[in-house]
Amino acid sequence: MSKQTHIVRKAMLSDAQAIADMAREVFVKTFGHSTSEENVNNYLKENYSTEAMAKHLQHPDHETLVAVDAGGRIRGYGTLRKNVREPCLDDVPDKIELLRLYVDASALGRGIGGSIARALEDLAREQGFKNMWLGVWEGNYNSQKVYEKWGYKRVGEHIFYLGDEAQTDWILLKALINDG
Image (cartoon, rainbow, N blue to C red; front, top):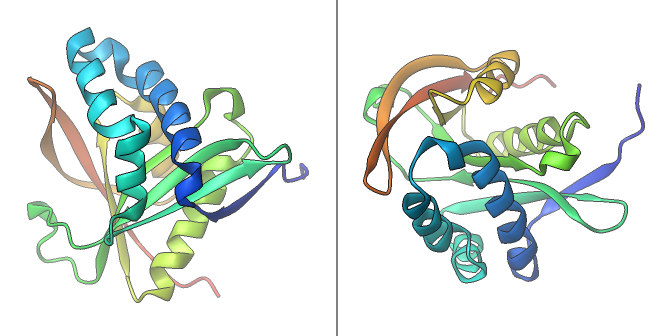
């Protein structure tokens, strides 16, 4: 078993710039080829500027965790979002959205995404949620495989607008069974 190279903790407002910087890099690497440069740049400005990330971290319906390496560098983050409706899940009780889960490309394969996901699942359980869902772009095959490995099942889809381009996201759902 490999030695853990990071800790997972609650994100702080002072993390906003580091999270935003890492998220921009991940977003461009993962989705930059899927739409126009204008759409990407607008999305980055709206969602991953330091100011936008600070608002994200302060939003009352968001809970964000970060993975920090031994040198103090943020290597990944994940956010839960409460009080959002997804039509294909209307009959699913006690659900929460895994809004984002990003890992720095240079840190992939170190268990960081899994650590953040487990910590978010624990947090959701502590708050009484029994199901977790997420949207994953239909062309993001690597993430789809990871989520399937973690027990998520495809239950629907919705349209996600990246600027003026409609893209299909798969809706994945996982029951948060208490393993303890």
